[in-house]
Structure formats: C-alpha cells, structure tokens
Length: 160
Image 1 (cartoon, rainbow, N blue to C red):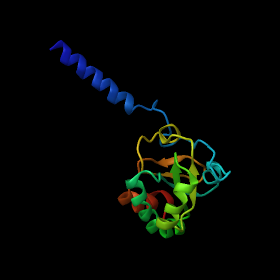
Image 2: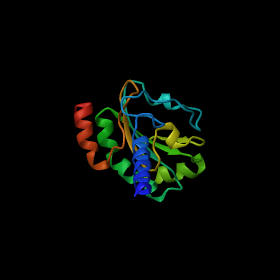
Image 3: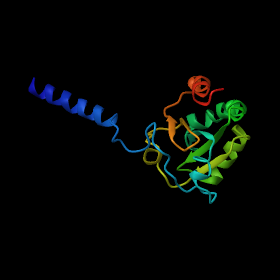
C-alpha cells in the first residue's frame, strides 16, 4: 500500500511540474524570444512589429504538420484581412526540405525556417504541429490554439 501511495505522489509531482509556470518555453503573456532563421532574418522581423502574428509550427518530416499547411493557406486570406500575419515556421528543418512543401501547400503564406532550434526550447511546445498567436507588441496571446477556435479567438483578440 505504501508503495502505491509513493507512486501516486510521484505521478502527481510529475503532472504538476509539467503544467507549472516554470516549464521551459513561452507562456501566454510572455514576450517572444528572438532567434535566427535560415534566411538571415530573425523572428523579431515578424513579431513585435505592430501586427498580430499567427505562427504555425511545422516540419517537412512531420506528416501531420505538412497536411495541415493547407489549413493555414485556407485561413490566410481571412487572417490577413484581420491584420494578422500568418507565418509557416518550419522548425528543426532545412530550407531545401521545407520550401517546396510550403510552396505546394501554402503558397501565399510567408515561410520561415529555423534549422537548429528545438520547439520545446523556443516555444515550450513538445509536438508538431502547433498554432499560436502573438500580439502587436510581441507578447504571446494564445498558445495551443486550435484551428476550430481560430475565428473566435481572432474576433475576441483582434476585434474582427
């Protein structure tokens, strides 16, 4: 019995650590962390420039994230009209792998490629794909955003 209680306490501690605010990466309300992109640009060229930025994290080697690039293309016209810049951010990828897929699935969406950074370190995301919204000042407004919640979030946040 004592052993089961110990296991339960360890599991509870793991769960609380996983969801605590001290977990690595960004949390809603945090300012973005700048990092270099393969094009010679940086993330700050997009975030914190007075526009909302919808970041879709994906990778050419992640089938589910590639398939959802089409969804980003489908909503891109709507989000641009709401003063939101969509950004297809290929993480732990190469331009030669990401660019053809982005051009085929989401040709009107800007592509940024981050070759060396881990998404869990940059954004606190442990899986791909992910969707998040940054505000005009560069703060993370919404993390773990779902496609179905995007229109509602934009109406509430951006006011359109």
